[in-house]
Image (cartoon, rainbow, N blue to C red):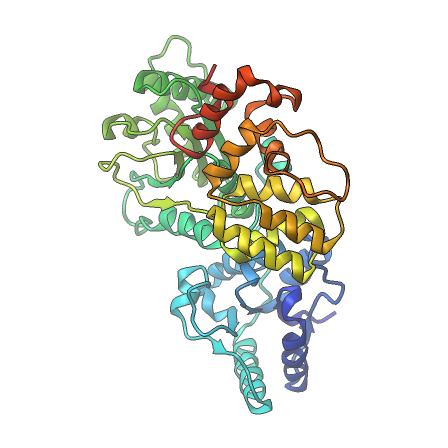
Length: 460
């Protein structure tokens, strides 16, 4: 069976435009793979994996909704990593951008490249098809698959719910590979990226998603080093060195009574000898660590690419920083549809209004969507969404002091009910505890910790 010429990647919302594009490609004599059973809630299937590997070129219809869908993220990322083996990936990964600007496109290599604008006429479609045909004729082989054989971390087998943030994922990847050195230069320089943001915005989830989506770029595997605990340099270093001893044992090294520095050098030496890039995630780094302490958290080998997550970064840290804010309106509506299983336009318009009011805070959006999941009256749900007012901090603070009973089906949910799920998730408390006057102050402080600079687990 001949390989596919073109793998057509798109999101469900652009089906009508993609139909016309596919017809033009086939009229130009190209063999096109398109998943005709696509559904907005579908993930990555073996059929997609095989079809992408057998295709010569990926053509993405890159609308603003495109990067909010996980399957689209996987298709584009996998094609880009595979195409890098042949040189410039832009010779194998092509983009049709129907939007007036390219701010939504990632990675930056694609955003900086010349891409096709929205086709408005039959002549536009024919020109795009002919250009794609030229690229296909220049490609001798299919993209193939880039597969890491390293075991997948258990925490990545079932990653947390995650929507969007594709530009930030690529910003992390670009930062980790910006310091690649020529082959003639000794590999002694490490690559580092810092993911920074207030608690509850999804730093750990972003690191997990990056480790899962880009795992094939790290054939040596992924290591996860959690530093959660008391915010002091000595404690952070002690937890880091405990992880190093466990990694050394995993590598078959006997550390005995070696010092932390000796263990660090031993592990680095073993990784150098294996000559396979690894990804290390150092999660929940205490804020404002001195640069000298930060240096201890980065392995002295460029075969280890390191992602640090922290609530605040010291200005002296010599590393690119990827700052996390709230979700965009598109990301917020995608999160809602994934959780609630609804694409009702009345509901989605109300979700967009909520995203704007709460700054796109993931906890608020997840909590509200979860609470409303089983209520299918669109106008009632829209009213409940509009009843959630104020900033993210305001909403969660109201939830902390809410004493309203669970509402009957069909009645408007009070704010406290809509986000009580978030407090359960982050504080580990039961619903009845939330209604006790004696706990109100503790809950309010904990909510401030979720939104602000602290950590919920550190409150009594």
